[in-house]
Image (cartoon, rainbow, N blue to C red; front, side, top):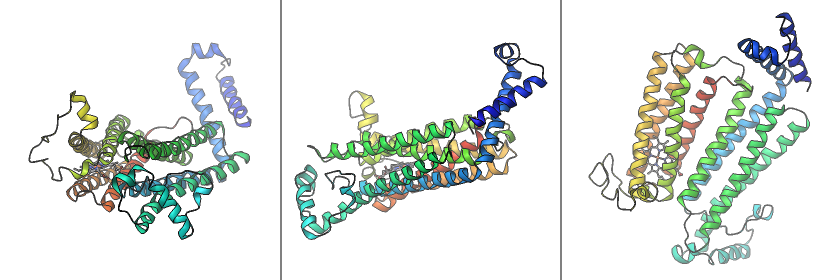
Length: 396
Ligand code: HEM
């Protein structure tokens, strides 16, 4: 409130100096000037907020970064959980009690007997021994434990900062967005487990894709809000460039999201264990099973060979787009920061492409599958840093 009043006073002072009456008249008569003055007032308001909340802003900034790191860790453990087929080993969910694993042999036997009631054991793992069960149980357990920890690390500081008045209304809205996304992701995870406990021990690749994309969105929001706090008032990278950085980044972003979708489809359909050759598939540029489903459109979402082909194609387009962006950045901008960041982005995509090929040639061992997913997230973080620094933030 105080900040808003200050901003309004600032606006009124400028209006007075220019001899303009405050109100709708001014807006109609001098739209450009009115807009500039509003921006000035907003800037002043932001500066005030920043200077008054510097210590809190710094804390909130690091807190949001810790959120990014924790979610990346969760994604890595989630990847291992999926690749080791561990996701369906815990068939119950309890917020408090589920945080305690079986503590003695009798409790382990109880959990194992419960697991034996479900299709994954009956159809797939019928010869599994207790010690093997413990192995898959722990991955899912750590994944859920990290989820709980994430919730706590979000909620406790959130309430503290809120009570201390560290958030203005815009930042508070952003925190509620994060809260909503976190709840959605938890619910999504549980829906995935539930869906694999009936009839077919299989988690749909659509659900897996949604889960992965939601993880990317949460990482993206946490990071974006953190960067806005720290760099929101810094000059944008665009100012030193003779081309539209944002247009390039939007296209790269669209390609990346499509690539993540097809990556998750490839993983969810186990499409990485067929056609383990590169660049051709089954000795051809287009795999023999490319259009076996009818109607054709189904092949794009249900046919493992076509899905793997799409993942290769989109990966190649992304590689070319990032390469061109780097050339454009170096030739069309004087910003050393843009040169460095676009160079890092290019290195990351080259590495990711090579890692993808190696993962495929090796028929997706757990370690390579996990690194390939982690490298995609690191690329996303680097991409968002460039995007954030090139968009002039309006709200911070
Ligand atoms: C260049 C950009 C690329 C990006 C951003 C990317 C990203 C991804 C992502 C996010 C996944 C899902 C991981 C998971 O859910 O566990 C994935 C899976 C996969 N990708 Fe890529 N990928 C790229 C290129 C490639 C290339 C060029 C190949 C091979 C030619 C490839 C082969 C695979 C395979 C085999 C999987 C399935 C791994 C599994 O089953 O866990 N990727 N990719």
